[in-house]
Structure formats: C-alpha cells, structure tokens
Image 1 (tube, chains in turn green, yellow):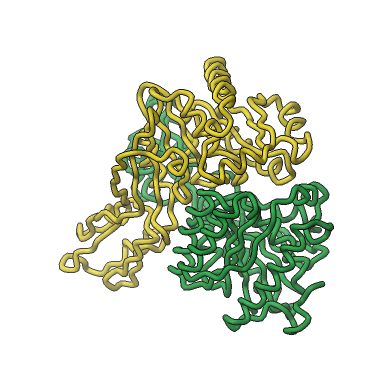
Image 2 (cartoon, rainbow over the protein chains, first blue to last red):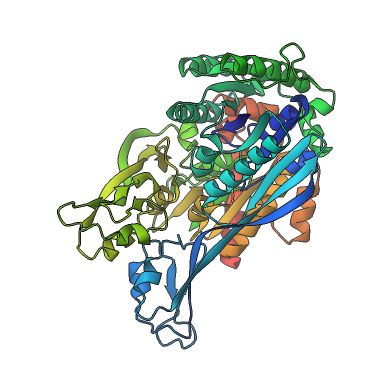
Length: 309
Length: 280
C-alpha cells in the first residue's frame, strides 16, 4: 500500500483541484482529505456519507462556578491567558476559562485548591467515511479554533489505510493542508511520495523552498508541479531549477485555464471536462507514476496501462 | 486600531490586501505577518536593515541528582513531552507546549526550564511600513507561541495590520484574537464560499466585527455576494479578476505598484474599515 500526499507550502495553489483529477485518473484509490480545517474535496466528489464519528482529543478545563473560591490561582498558573475573571465578588462565576485559549495542559486543574475545575474530554471535530463516484473518501472537520489537528489528520490517514487493506486497494491519495506546521507534518510523515503544487510567484517559490526542506527533513521523496505556469514562464523555470537543486523531481506544469473554475462550479474534476489544463494533468499523472516507480512505488496497476480511466 | 486580514481558504489574496492596506497608511502603521508557516509579506515589501531575534518556548530540563524517579511529571504531562515509568524522565521537547506544569508538580524541585527555539522574528522598515514577521523553523509543529510573540509587537498608537494564516484552527484564532476588525478575503468560487463560511464562524465566536473583500470577481458566480447579503455581512470591496494583476504579483509587484489606481481603492477600504470599527 502506498500513500501519495499532495501538499503546498502556500495555500490556494490548486492542491484540491489536482487531487480531484488524480482521483479520477488513478484506478482504485482510497482518498483522504487531510485539510481538516478547510476540507473542500467533497465539493467536487459529492460524497454520500456512510459513517460519521466524533473526534475527541485532549481535555478542556472548565471551572465550576459554584465550587470556585475565587482565589485566582488558576489565572496565575495559566501561561496561555485562558483564564478570565468577572471580579472576585461576582457570585456565580468569578473566574472562567476561554475554551479557544485553553491548551488543555491541566495545570490549573491540578493546582486548584478546592478541585473546582473539570477536565473533560475535548470534542474537537468529526470525521466521515463516504462513497464517491471515484472510490471511498475519508474526510474530517476540525471544530473552530481547535488544536490537535495533527491527531485528526492521523485518524483520517489510519482509517484510509484500514479501508485500503480491507478492500485491497493499493494507493491512498492524500489532499494535504497548506503550510509546514502540525497538520502538514502529520499528513506527510511516512508517505511514499509527496507531490508539491506551487505557482510561479515569489510566494510560491519561497513557500516551496520551505516545504521541500520539510520533505527532506522527513526523508520523503518529492515531486513538484508548477500550476498556472504560463503566468510567468521565467519564474517557472527558476522554480523548477531550484526544486531540482533541492533534490525534488519536476513532475509537470499545468496551464492557467479559466475552465478550472468552471469545473469547480460544476462540481467536476478538471479531467472530467474538456480543457487544456486537463491535458496537462494527464501528463502530470503519467510522469508522477514514472517518478514513483523509480522510488519503488507503483501507483498504477500495470506499467503499460498507466491506470488512466 | 488592529485590523486582521484573514480567510478560510489559502491563496485568496490575504497578503495582497494586507500589504496594500499598510501601504496606503504608511508612516503610521506596523504590519505583523502572522502567517509564520509561510510568511510572504517581505517578498513584496522588501524591507531594509532586517534584524532577527530568536523566539523559543520554555521546556523542561531535569536535574538527575535531584530526581527520585517518582514519575509525577510524566503522569501529569498531557502532551507526552515528559515520560517517566518510575524512571528518570525521558524528554520529548518538540511535543512540549511550555505550560510549566511538570516543573510545578515535581516534589523535588528537580525540573527547571530552558528555552527551546521554535522560530525567529524579523523586523525591517519598508518605506514607512514597519514589517514584523514570524518565521517558524522547518520541522516545528507548534505555530501559536510564535504567533503570540509576533502579536506582542502590535503598536500602542497607530494602526496594526495583521496578516493571518489561512484556516480556522488555533493558529488562525491566535492571529485574529484581540483585533478590532477582521477583513476577510475570499474568491467567488465554491471553495471560496465554503471556506468563507468557516472563517465567518470562527470570527463570530470571537465576536469581532468583520467584512468581506471578494477578490478575482468574474471567475465564478454571485453566491458569495448573496451569502454576505443574506447574513448582513458588509461587502467592503470587490477586486476584478485581472490577468495583469496576477502577472504583476508573479513578478513580486504589489497591487498598488501594478495598478496605481488601486491606491485610492485601498485608501477607501481603510476608511471604510475605520468607520465600521467606530460603529461597532
């Protein structure tokens, strides 16, 4: 079983649009949307939810107002400025904890002299297993302001692996989050190949260099695709050169094509409508399968059929 | 006054808007780039005389001579950053949130804290715009402490512009909290609308007044506008889709540099935000 993760340092470079097309082209994959803060793959794949689970992670401190002595120790110990006061003379709830600021460290809970702080499991989000026209999709929704997105990503990936094993599917395609932090690291570690999608802009180049540092840090082979490459051909060449120097392989280029938005409006993948960008994606996929095979990773079922549906 | 520029979806134009807002009020503004995983403002403002400072979080260090291997620290830690099975504790500093709890629970006073670097803050001046940006070290998972450190540079007088990271998680909340107004940037597409709704949910929880800038108008449809109208969300500005602007951006030009008429557009946006703030 192999995991292909699609990431980008910079947001909005086209990860999800490309993943949706790969979902069409790769034969028999399991799809995992690990952008748990802003999952959008479902807008293209229109899933039917088969299973829905609540995700609990860590704990949340809550002061029981009726037990609180208003000593203020909790406020003094909290390093995350999560404890607020209405004033010690405020009868019902002299102190309260902002759930958005609480890290769930438990220091206030431990040191409250009258044990007036509860520390219940924290309801942090939901995850789903769905059917789509291109195979099973595991997706999730982190609740607003929650941390622990990395653990939700890990949950999504584990469920995708379980489904792949159960249904004898060889490939998992992961739609990753932007950035280089917690959920990106959780999406990337242990995968077989990372496809990094960027754009020919200074931001695209800058953030690509950072994410390629990250893929090397975790020793994951990386392939690079410049989306909307014809916006700046000079910059595209510069980015591809730089990517090669950072030991990534150039996998393809996708043209700037207004039909990409039309496809999104229709809830279809680029390769499900006729457009120039779709041709580029097909070439990208062939290259990606070849790059993967040099890493000992087989993304398609047979080498000559190239897995194109 | 603190104005955050945010969005649920990445790549909608947060940096473009934040930079343009700072440019039109140059001389009385500080721009805080809180997108510490992918800080981009400097690429367009090109600051002079950049000074760098290291930001760390406090992590435990155990004095083996004092430790009696009681295991209290390991039992306490919620993040598995300190693990002890009645042995001298093993430390996993990259998991530590810096709460200081282990130090407080240790009955022997065997734990002290040392600073572990997680990133840097870079300061520079760009023609009247003071830029302060965070840059998270590669491989580092926890961005919020660095965002907090950048936020500490909000100016007491004058206008602070905060370029927020995309999304709706703890990092975005950290960037946006305690701001007086949030300018939300989106695009008129299904992804843009979906992620705008998520960001609106986050900002409503924080009870911060906000309005919407729709970028690249013309590529999609009117559903973002309809949504804003139905929710009584002020539509602050619409920027037409223009390949010329996209190409200029790809050369590292600011939107005002590429289209000088945008200067008055963004000055108007600033005044609109200012008056929305006063009414809120």
